[in-house]
Image 1: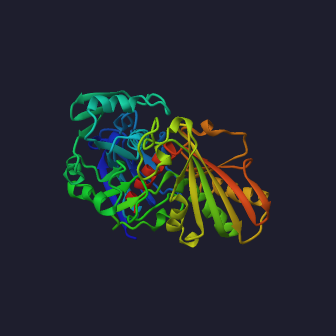
Image 2: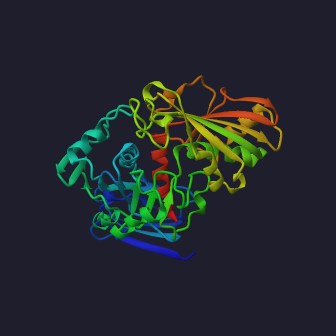
Image 3: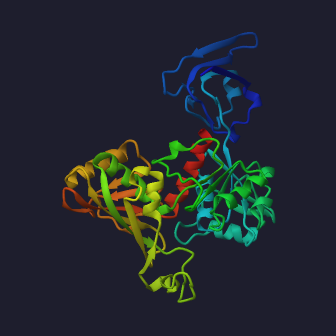
Length: 424
């Protein structure tokens, strides 16, 4: 790696527009105006992976809006010398195609983060007035109160002081993402899940497309499991399903530690928008056409088999099914596996807890509390292992239980995947 440096005047940079990340900072040079004729130059050599603090400014990791203005302290110029490709990165600009459940929640997640910026939304079926209403009020996740949301005009929404362009285009290749600077587009309509169909967004100026659903041919990535396999030349990816995002981290820990010979998964899954409020036609899935509000409905799912795509060592070792139940959010995975290396249930719990506090922190959770489904509404982790709910028949045959907010947790992972892609 070659050393790079960047110099800028305090007065010339609008910090509030950026969340600047410094990679491998090796030297920080601060020029301070002590008087009209004398400047003091200070050189900091930060410790590895340690932030530099100066008058309350955390410069070593992420640089945010500086209040009060630096000029009040007499600071005039800063020079940074860093090892790596990027010394500072602007916010990642994203667009969303399809303002349904996942689209709106990805928007909520993005608006609460300082590393991404929502710049555009496309949905041909709803007006800006209705977009605002649906975004602001949510039966499950409550009213959005982080900032004021209002309509500027029929093509623009205001989230606080930030403007978001609104389009109503049906054909993905005609959506002008490039005009808004949206480099990353979340394809959340549930319609364009094939690689070629999703790639149509690239013609409108997008650089990368993230499908918020499983895809039969786009490469799938699960944050915490295989995202490091992503290469910068891949333009269309799938974030897999919410259930795969729950199952894969758990399966990874168990397989890495004890080895999985084979296993079956069931997910008890909350209702989704594709189901019927009352009995209605569903030609491909007759049971799926029954009223969601008063039935437990067996259904198929490819979530377990998809684990084999993100963890090739488990290919053809897992399969599963789903039960749709009358709850509006939060689902739970029941994974029953035969282990290669025998282990007591306490040893299994210890391995999962260790991972939840280490390599998979923020992705895999661990609890020994007497929890129920609503306790996980709004939980941004992919999978929360319920230590009290699992059982073992013997040291080689065990049932493991893990919760997940199939809406919020999954939407958080979509944004996390985008952030990772931007760093590669």
